[in-house]
Length: 390
Ligand SMILES: Cc1cc2nc3c(=O)[nH]c(=O)nc-3n(C[C@H](O)[C@H](O)[C@H](O)COP(=O)(O)OP(=O)(O)OC[C@H]3O[C@@H](n4cnc5c(N)ncnc54)[C@H](O)[C@@H]3O)c2cc1C
Image (cartoon, rainbow, N blue to C red; front, side, top):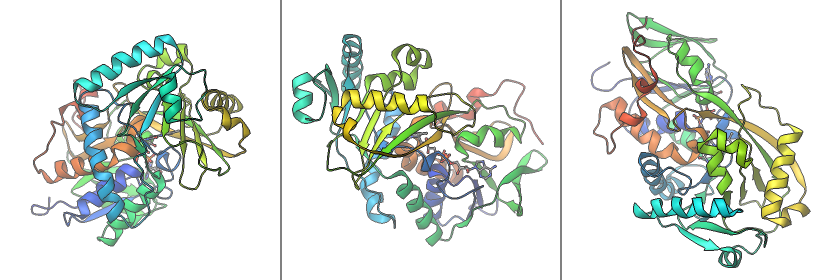
């Protein structure tokens, strides 16, 4: 490292890479960010912008999400792009007796650690959200949940970082890592070599490919999600919504197959509805499928029947960076100097980006941390033979 301030090279211009760049730049660190395509061209530009607290597992995951939530008001003021952040409150829609019992227990756990969540019966839920179908059984409700424009957030981090001196190189694909002894000192790209005292892998669903360049086998897999966008409509729903099935699908792929795909519904400031979403392991394929679109439209219009009258204008799919335990990989890797992982946020990267940028920048600068980062250590996935490279 050059003195006490390392120069940092970040691979990946999604919400995670740009948030880390922004947080480092605020500490006057010299940063270069390289992005294969354009900023927000990965999952961060092909997703919803839900900031749900209720969907996070009680424990470190929820703690992190709450820390992140605290930052959105401030970021809305200081980032140079409108974030469209609104704390609308969120509903987890319940459709079966089995889900009702599961959500009651889930909400009880969340309340025991102080989260403001309550279970609404059918009438209470419909009173709060009149567009809901009378066939639902109820909803878990929290005033904490909200939404943001994910592309606005990514570009906001990037522009603020750039203004603070971060060099951003788009259309620059990392082809290999550059080593000196057992240390990563830079990257080889289609546009030449770039160096850093610390190289951060923030490549989302593609991060396992970058890790493999260092001989590491890390289990971050692309988990595809398809989304349907409707033409702008009058205000139709006032809260963002997911279903109890969504929570099952997120945490337990086997249960997801039994329970069917979950759903998500949010209305943007422009009035478009974002209807989601599927959860599929389909490699790096980002094509929409008729089956995916049909499932989304059936699921969302069952819960909010007014959706049937809207016109669909486009669809897209993104790749969530899935990990086996649902937690991201954040921090250095045993036996490999100069290399940090910051990837694997699955369906929570937008919500967790402020806290991730803050924590990872502090780890790089060796500043004190408010959390133990142990549960996020990439080392949890290394077998005993890994950890020495060059
Ligand atoms: C359908 C869907 C809905 C979602 N909904 C939500 C939601 O409501 N709330 C929420 O919080 N999260 C949501 N997510 C998850 C969220 O989108 C991700 O967790 C987040 O965007 C991950 O950000 P990232 O920066 O790690 O990855 P990405 O945004 O994918 O960025 C990684 C970047 O690395 C670049 N890259 C890859 N390889 C290389 C290379 N070799 N050289 C240079 N650059 C490279 C890519 O081009 C890409 O731009 C959703 C995801 C999907 C797919």
